[in-house]
Image (cartoon, rainbow, N blue to C red; front, side, top):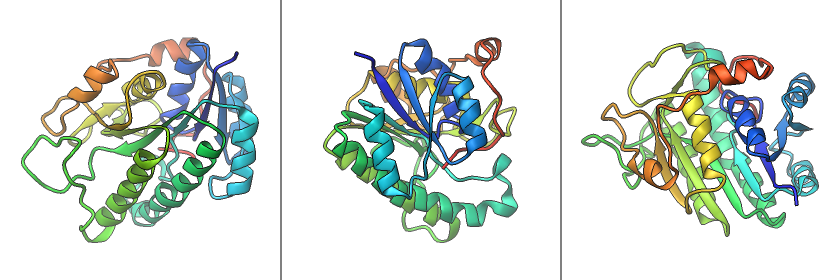
Length: 259
């Protein structure tokens, strides 16, 4: 039987680095996007594209049921290219809606479709302030005001929904992304994470790890990622950008996600 992954946000910054890893491991990848243009590019990369909006629950349900996937990977975000500061306030609201409402739709249809493993993108920079490093059981900054609070509450909603679902629910708290397709060529700020290593963490979680939350970031003293190293056999040093370019993976527009 063909093993199938449904990758929500397949054309996003992490998604397009993740696709070649899954294909190389023999997975059939069904990937969602809202764009017809990106659907054609995904198909060229070996993905079976599905043009669907995560907020359209009936269409999403049909797409997932037809995919017959055993694993769902939620890499959906709605962020501007290069995390443009002038656009981040409004983007934070849209992104929080994806994390709350979009995740609810994805989890609901995944459970009804018989999916057994659900992997979701979260962030490792929504913790409430404390002595470093942050561990997975430390509280999030849900009481914060402004954009930080909006983001943290969206993160908390996503994580709670995934962990509470009746399947293996894995939350990957990614650090600050850099590398090809992210808009950042070098690390910037605490808890950096190369996009290749971020994709590798999701690929590892397809087969490894039990339900729970995992910090995924480089060891700069900000967050503790020992749990991911142990349970997901993950390393922040993993790179595959050159291999992906040699394989002819298509270039998609640079941004942080695809809803």
